[in-house]
Image (cartoon, rainbow, N blue to C red):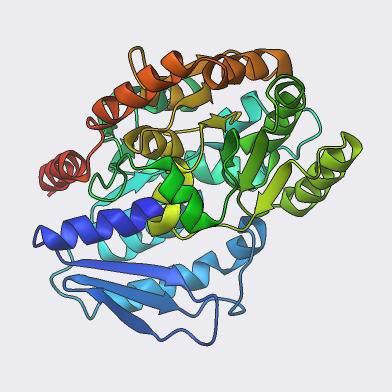
Length: 378
């Protein structure tokens, strides 16, 4: 979502649309306003302690956040529309709309009820405050932007929403940045060994399925000599820290600690080398509104194995650079990965098709669509 908001703001600014992004101050060291680039200003709002907090702690400061944003909006007379992201900001956006009368469009990025549908049995259910807030946003919004047709269908099916207010605009991929490249060169730059490499990229939490990746790799390691699994991401959410600890313990219990690497998160602009240095990426998410990793990996020529859920069903379609797996059983996942690692012809075909397929996801197309939605609202 952070990547999406950043790319959206930059792209709109380059089209001559002034963008002011408001976010809660998470550190005393950041200035009140940052000029990110011409036409794109980032404002840090004082609302609660200046540190990172999970959504359930942040929610108590949303009233203050909305009031402060409303006050600052008063000094931007040319501001004509509010676009909020994620349920927390959507809730704040309702207050801003009520006080200013500005049209309000919202992007959820993930939906609590949908996450609960495929939630792992031991994972924490979505909070009732989130579910209530999502419904409040839906009841009070002017437009919703869904990332895929599947997300729109989920909104209509599970939230009793008028389909006429839901518009579809897929996120984009920076095709100047995410391109195929030499695997050997990428591995040298990253300091990775020249071995069969399975990749997982995502926040460390049950919803993203890193446990599925490890259980599948147990079978992969038995059949693909010297193969390794690289997990790129950091703990996130209320279950994140416990999940990260459990994953490390599981890797040790399977005697795979020397073949599973837990890597720190990588800056977005450095991700192309991570994709190029790998042989296949697993995306076993239990819910996904879009699946940016799947789109970027395909653009980089990396074969994708993804769960048949949510937006992944759109992003990894027929004739794409990847395959979809039903469910989260380790045999199905390991077989799908082995079919790529053990079949060079199959791997080359997916690598070839990926960039062609990913061309449909561009920021140029996305911005054109979103700008049309804005104009329609105004």
